Image 1 (cartoon, rainbow, N blue to C red):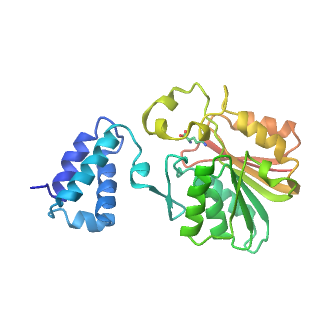
Image 2 (cartoon, rainbow, N blue to C red):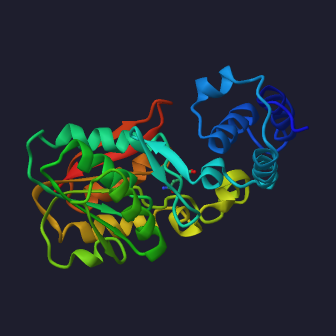
Image 3 (cartoon, rainbow, N blue to C red):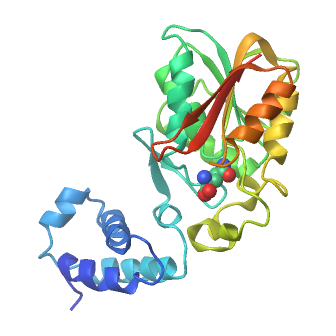
Amino acid sequence: MPPTIGEILQTAARELQATSPAPRLDTEVLLMHVFGLDRSALIARGHISLTDDQFHQLEKLIARRRGGEPVAYLTGTREFWSMALNVSPAVLIPRPETELLVEKALERIPRDAEWTIADLGTGSGAIALAIAKERPRCRVIATDISPPALDVARSNAARFNLTRVEFREGSWLEPLMSMKLDMIVSNPPYVRADDPHLQQGDIRFEPAQALAAGPDGLDDIRSIILSARDYLQPAAWLLFEHGWDQGNAVGLFLHRHGYRNIVCHPDIGGRDRVTACRL
Ligand code: GLN
């Protein structure tokens, strides 16, 4: 006889203790996925037994989670800006701190603006779709070098009916040719290639190409800063995410290459996270 939801919450959470920083939450999310229920409905049904099928499905998911696979890849979804986005191992799992980049971008885009905005290395499409949702009159173009990532992003645009967002395949600004933009946003890779954190935990399952960027983690940020100058209208904005210890280096590089109004915004943990500037 398969166990009840309440029993699973205890046993599975115990099994995940060695791998997961949040074993109980992971178990809840996997159960919610198997049952198709939200959290409160699940908790209210603690006394209900799983069917054999549900139990097997859950056991497989728990085994994969014990092997380190991120919960978002197991369920195929992650919430960002109140949208449950499709995710797959082809894309970085959207992080809550990236909502800061969206917020800071929106603060600079007037409500009724009809700007042309590019999101570089869009991955799941998280940033582009959040901006398109909040600023429906803007033309949002999202690029990515990875065709499977673009498939995920397109599926999300369709899912949230944000079908005006355009997707183009290529490296950073390359697919935009000679366009003139009012804003560029990006969450590029910025982790140092030798950062031991890349070999630990969930991040091992994410695309390395979306995470690591050369010896100091700034290879892609520098390349975006340099090429963005040819695409930005006068006084147009560039905003991007970076590591907590990269704010100064990024600010100096921007200053040296003619950008002004350089502001580094801290995340909720008080650490440097997003830099905004204009040409
Ligand atoms: N913040 C991510 C991490 O450290 C990195 C994301 C990125 O490189 N853009 O896990």
